[in-house]
Image 1 (cartoon, helix red, strand yellow):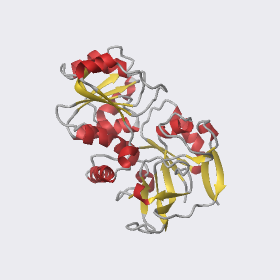
Image 2: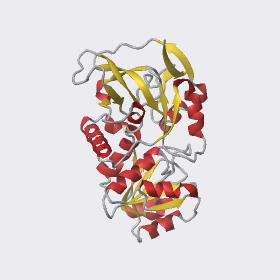
Image 3: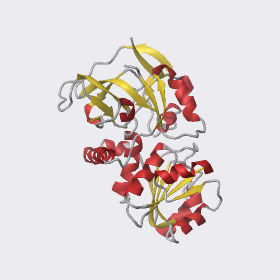
Length: 332
């Protein structure tokens, strides 16, 4: 019998229920994947608490935006998709039809062939983190030598991807973390400098690390707790890319600091770029090429079986000494 994990209200991951279901038939423009693996993401956590930028339209609802599996059905009007081949879902809000199941039907516009030489587990782990970081770091900020980019909560998968990508283009990448023992990991990931965020002199440190220039870009998922700490160190025409609320509070903007340097606050969602066909193509092409060249690699922390999805969320919710993606393997 086919299985799916669903929630019936905004109770968080502890409200997840594993139940039997019938696979949906692929409709016009859709394909169906037999899911081999799907990844956990912090956005899923916010979604289950109704703290995300999108909400479910009804319940029960599935979670999950990032999966890899085998195409087992192709709907009317779909071309260019190979039956029996492994494809990945691209990160997007699928309302009630998330990937936390044995099968998923999905709009064929939002799938991409699994990267060559990657397993299903690895293929399910790369798209959210690297595409989330790619657009603000490369397309919008034009990372290059001489650019100073701050990445807060840099041990997160998207933050770590930003370090990887910015370093590829020669930018001065400055990472924050709550714990000193993350320093070596962040340096190895591409950080030029690491600041332990309990340090009360964040802005002063940023000015020192940029030779007085200030930061051109902030890639920030934290929320209210960080922006005012680094805003005195914003460079002229700086941009704050705000893409999450890890501290659970939307920020009150430091308007005076922003006025002084003509700074921009950019609420950023990857979904806006995935649904733009040109931008989607640029993002996937970057990931494929960077994987092929060995510039980025999958980083899997733990793998859980389908039955232990809630236990996987328990693990992800705790402070970790290891880093990387947490992935569910369906066993199909």
